[in-house]
Amino acid sequence: MHPRRPVIALSEVQRLRREKLARLKEQGINPYPYKYEPTHHADQILGSAEHFESHPEEKVRVAGRIISHRGHGKAGFMHLLDESGKIQAYCRQDELGEEAFERWRDLDLGDFVGVSGPVFRTKTGEITVKAESVELLSKSLRPMPAKFHGLKDVETRTRQRYADLIANPEVRDVFRKRSAIITAMRRFLDGRGFLEVETPILQPIYGGAFARPFVTHHNALDSEFFMRVSFELYLKRLLVGGFERVYEIGRDFRNEGVDRTHNPEFTQMELYQAYADYHDIMDITEAMVNEIAVSVFGATQLQFGEHTLDWKAPWPRHSLFELLKAKIGVDLSDGDREKAREACRQAGLTVGHDWDYGKSVDELFSAVVQPQLIQPCFVIDYPRDLSPLAKEKRGAPHLVERFEAFVAGMEIANSFSEQNSPLAQEEAFRRQAVLRAEGNQEAQPEDRDFLRALEYGMPPAGGLGVGVDRLVMLLTNQHTIREVLLFPHLRPETALEEIAEEEAE
RNA sequence: GACCCGUUAGCUCAGUCGGUAGAGCACCUGCCUUUUAAGCAGGGAGUCGUUGGUUCGAUUCCAACACGGGUCACCA
Image 1 (cartoon, rainbow, N blue to C red):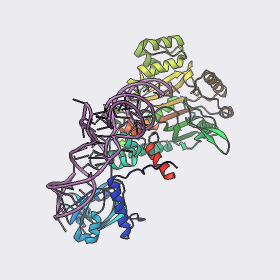
Image 2 (image 1 turned 30 degrees about the vertical axis):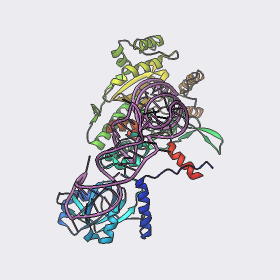
Image 3 (image 1 turned 135 degrees about the vertical axis):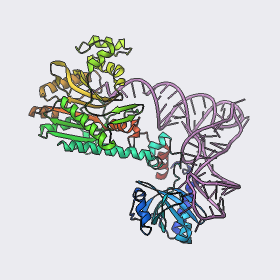
Image 4 (image 1 turned 90 degrees about the horizontal axis):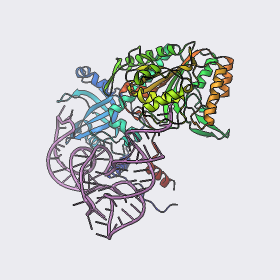
């Protein structure tokens, strides 16, 4: 045992609430009863004000968290917050009785209560439930973060998202929108005959993207597994198996840094459509996002920071090399490594000794073009070395048929005409193996089972990956990914670990 | 991983050129039967992120560490 350490001190308010809880139990009141049956949500009552004013005898039951509580001698008001919004309740001693009114006075901000009674309009015009009974549904032992300052501290807001959701109604709204966006996405894909599938998160070989994986261990099998960095290779196996349109919405894991557009686990939507090429996938992508914008927001023009983004399809399609040429005056589409490296130097980039043609083009594009791609657009045709799972471009074999979609300088989608030649795929894996041997930790390992699948024959197909979190950011005008993730990645909280240790002693 | 900035009451923030701290809201007590940032009167509340150093004395200066934010790197 450690030397005695003080138990984490309770604040004054926490102490008082625990004492209050004990008193309730002594009085035979269960502070955590089992159920309540509300008849209405707050917004239903507020939305039916005329109905209730013409039916003063009709009674409602509402339940929620107390977010304001004001006594006025032998009467008082409180606001309850339920999922739909807030509603005021008016509590009078002569209505509730002396004992119940005293219990009402003893309630705290944060407690859950159920209130029943008729609905009326106060002098100041607010629709209010006149309480005939007030039942404690759950006693709160911790003070609410804020009454009207809100909760601002970013760390507390993300670490204690529950408190953030209570204190900041607009945060709830972002996550409702997120859900609606994903629902609209599913509806769009289902409507086009795509089959939603689920593929392994724990994979013996990872692939489909350039990224370092999280490694884990399967005890019973005594073997290493990788958390997936992409769904790609499994979804393509399903094309081999005869499904023609498949998609998956789920979590990818990449063992990388955290910043305003990256979280180690993030949500991706990938789809694959047999007999389609990347032109068809561009059509689908813009139609899908257009439809999401209309169904969730009722508009295709949406504000994002200082920009008004126009999501209406079709989106412009630009050749990567034309965009580069327009910017730097040099055409780099010929595959000349030295020329590309020199162009990077001219642009002020520090060129790594290992930068090949593809890497140089990509770095240059990221530096000089990407930040200026504000309105939704497609950038098409990429160097082959960057895209080992894509098919070479018709008429330009050092390029591949690939596009990325950009909005507000952010990449939100990536797509290929998928490589379905087993021999070309094997060759591409071989080139990756060379890079890997040279120390590139993101180079993709060869997946022999995937090659075996391709040998059975995969139909020509187009594939798409969409960064769902980024799409949500753009559509909801949020500028960091943590604002669209309920529980973004944070380091463990040491103070809480110490409490756990003390409790274990 | 590097650099810069931050961490003070439940929340939002002041402040201490080194002498252990304040405000508003929240909280407690009293008054008040239509208030809504209710009002009036009174009151309590803080290991000033953690550990160490300098000092008679550290919340303040210094260092390390923890956590967060920003920039960069990584993320082609």
